[in-house]
Image (cartoon, rainbow, N blue to C red; front, top):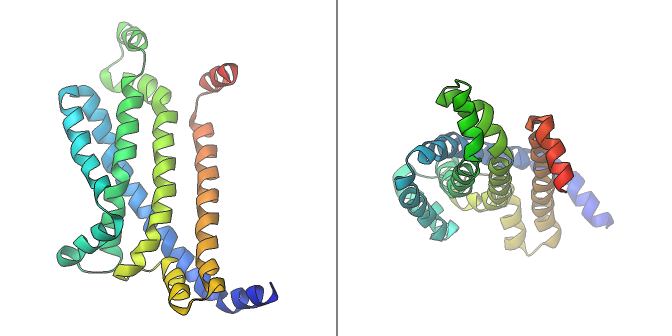
Length: 218
């Protein structure tokens, strides 16, 4: 144990640097995926005939092995952060898109009819009725994607994108368990911390009336 802490102390600046790179890779990938997938999911609720086709096409990406997808990026955009973010974003699209589409589609039609009867526009119904009700489902997709992205970002080391994967692969090449832990433990802590943060954000964004309903159901 003493050896572990002394090694961590010596490598602390590197761990902090690589953790920062890892957060940057993961954050940009999830944000870009949200910007693409949430509006697309909303649009598909208006064009339901296209929904199955679009979701099926995007789901094909999930069948590509992650390391292979990172490799496919190299001939087109080279190595580094850019191809890593593109690959991670592609993997992140499906859960967010599917949850957005499902969450909004499952809003009771009676509520939409009530909003229409009150003179609300389609935008107002979306903003004031559908999105608040579907928010927990959408956030569940974002949480899933965030956990997946933080874990998968370790592979970005193979295309020189940095992150905690650099420390893990160095430990593997050295057959050094302590070095592997130096990279693996921060990844696990990031997953736990971000998951708790997103749960808290979802609670803050959920209207009090819906919180009360969830408590009663629970």
